[in-house]
Image (spheres, rainbow, N blue to C red):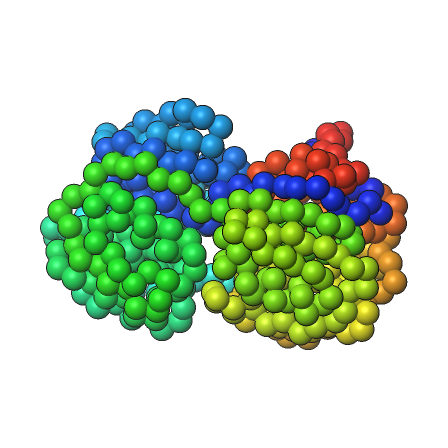
Length: 421
């Protein structure tokens, strides 16, 4: 059984380089299915979700070669739709991008229901609504989603009843080679949607409006290969920003797009943290006293739900009472029980956590109940007195490339160890 052991009390200092964004890399990897020739993808993070996605694609006939530490050649010329390993698909959420990719290229798809972190209901009804609008007949059973068309997808106007990042990405994938012009209204605006559109456009797609709530897609007959670099991971960057602030350290975070971090930067400044923005880096300095604040998570460009647990960990040691309202995933609060084991004073009321700052946290045995919750335990462990042992760390490794090594380089007393079960 692998675990992370953290001994708190050391301020972080130095510089850390952010990896490519997991949430951009995954849809782009699955989008290679649409291309049907060789693509070279750079700045790919070495995380579990990426490795599993590459395994899924390889088992379906994609030829995948790792040509450098963060660079892969992916050739989907001989890709076989409808045969993805259901056991692997069920282990990650992003596997549902196979639906849009298979449907967009082959006019049919068969994919098991996706998995991923368990922090509330994340329905795919908007995805299915969009696929049906593009001409697909969709059937489901207890395990699989199956889609067919008469002769490929047909462009149409798609309106989402609620903002959905995954749904927006899936409909882009399904519509890129649809006959005619597709307009997606009430689209999500996240940077990784822009990155996907930029990648597909580099392959010959005709997508405009990504990053706004109206995306227009002019269908093309085929796509060609290209070389493309994934954008930096704003959530990984935000995590190191919160860790630097919590420990009262000073950290230069390299390979970032500061505009993507504006909501995170704003809240850190609200709680008495200094953030200096450079062209492709930020310097975060904790001044000691963390003050309380209010946060409500929202779709981009609002405060990201994927930074909610990390900010909670920081606010456990703030002066005063903070309130975090979850506006995206209503039941993302399971991690609060783990923070309470460390002495945090948190009360959850519906969609809101009320956090009364304490003078100090203490080490404890805790679980990573999901990806971002797990890294919140790491941040809490960095400031706690004594030793914190974090279990189920495979969830953390789903989205963080060498987090232990990067934190050790910043002066953290942290290690990954194997414990007999």
